Image (cartoon, rainbow, N blue to C red; front, side, top):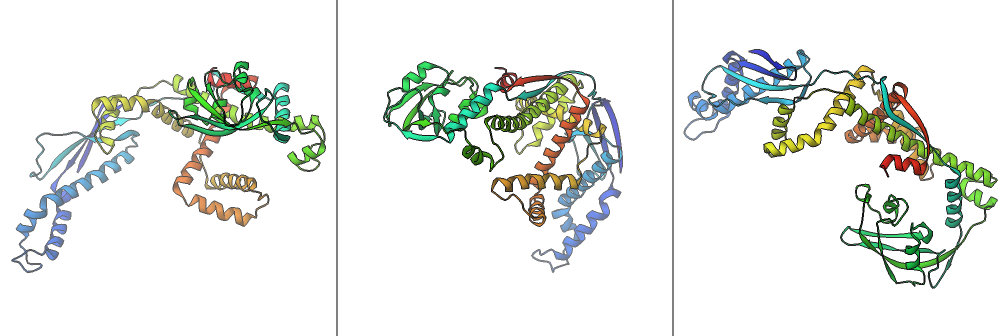
Length: 441
């Protein structure tokens, strides 16, 4: 057997595999001999069937199967030995006059090769790194929210401007059906508030979602609309009033502080605000990190220039699924996947250049921390090492879960690398300013 490669260009090659009779004959003969020993054909004793009959009945199928095995094995070995970094899989070139009655065969395969390129993380970047602060306005709002949440609810017959309602938002077309508590002062327009004033339990108020809140993302909370649907949502929803309550705010005293944070942890309003600020900014930092990671990825895709074997990939996409695609469908799929493919290549390059590796100990430690946090949420604050290790072992026995956790760890490693290497502009903002930066609103 002989394998040769013709380099069409930097991103495309054709590999030719020449298979001779010597490569497959012995194996085919052995398989047919085994068939003969076990064949049950009327008119012949078991094991006495003429080989010519076995050859006629099974020979072609066995030949095809063995030649295919030789092709797959030899081609895979060749790609490894030659250290060829390919995209997709080798595509066999169709030969119209191929003849299986010959003794020697020649097969050609098209290869799409990964491009060579470099990634410079130290060059000047337009990416900003946000530092989100909980400002005084937000802290005041959070303190008031806590007072209302832990305050005394007093049932009312009719709605007034300072009341809190419990009811259900519905819109059949959009599949909206969510029961929630809502204070009237959350609405952006006073005209909306006036639509509720004087209403009773059982009354229905119709509202337009456009401009309903000062931040459209509140629609996600109150209507349970998905992030993809929330932007520019302009439909009419019905709100059915089920309860009307006024709120007698809870006093900002030690009893409330202890209820919120445990006995003696917070002893004054100033400490309460400091605690709220600390907790909020921990969450903000996670959101800022995610935006930073997303922005770096977008920047790398935009600024790391290289070509792809696009025509090869489109042909490969046509064949890779359960059902073959048309040229037009393949082009559409390629357009959807090209950006993801580019980042996958960039990420692999960064991982290789910076020797980013995931050790099993990393995976165990990461999983252990996640499990401890989950257990704490259910009141198990001090689990034993044996308990945690047992759960870790069960989690990591699931391949899909292990893959997901490995991706989380690599994402954290990439984030740390980007923070270290990339020259970014630091930008201090409050949460509302961050939301505008994030969603362009």
